[in-house]
Length: 365
View 1 (tube, one colour):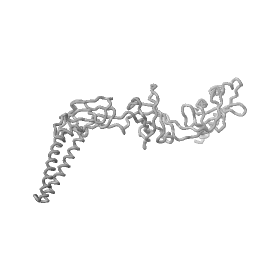
View 2: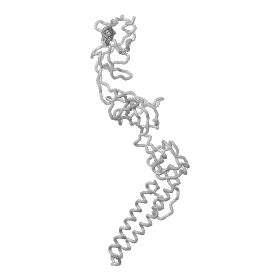
View 3: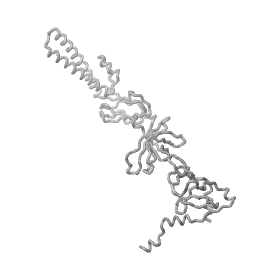
View 4: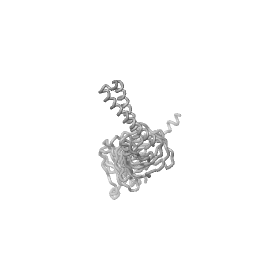
């Protein structure tokens, strides 16, 4: 073991050996091919690039469940159709609907009768025609009948019976026996249709349609744990669906509190407008989030950074004697144009940003 330890090369020694490569000297003609850049601290905002998936804004998407049981007789809308709140979506032949109408008619008749009896008993009581207890009981019966009538009305409203039909029942006129009508609870677009004529529905459990407001969507972005420190709620995001369709601007609205066990990533939710319904559910998009927190670092162009035989990053630094020395660096944040050099460079260093590959070629000769 001692022999093995004595023969191994420490990592620092390997790096020092790489740095020990002789400096490069160029002629005046060769220097004309080289462009230098003076390193200074610069402020910047990190930009995180990550894939995203489009979804409906679930705060504005409503699953429509049938309020009554029975077979579907007719569907009145199609996928992608825009509907308004209260618009009929499908017709259902439902005994629940007929029973609710009948119960409401009986409740209205009973309430009217009880109220007339209570009024007569009140008049009789004023003329000492009946006992006070009988008059009080009549008033109680009338109040109970009114409560039953109101409960029957709420049952009709729960079945989405339109106001015109309810008005006819209240007036004692015949109401159209159109069966049950499934209506849109909100305005939006039909994005899912799960019923066909003849399908048997169960009250309160059978999904029928999904109505969504597509003017705004959610985009879920998968972030690495190392990127979380740069992202805050409210940060601006650019969403690119590709194919030259332009960029949609949104904002980070939510960051998940847990890590996905399958991908080890954290989901961030971006809310964005959807002009022309450009963004579709389950569409893959490229998302660029700009951090709202300002940072400072030694930023260098990506063209200045090369890699050696060990894949370690380095730059060429101009020396006082006119030569160029290879210096290894450590890289932090980077985007498409710049690296933040965390160690290896100092304020005022002059590095090669155009012609570094030429210097590397000259050094290898």
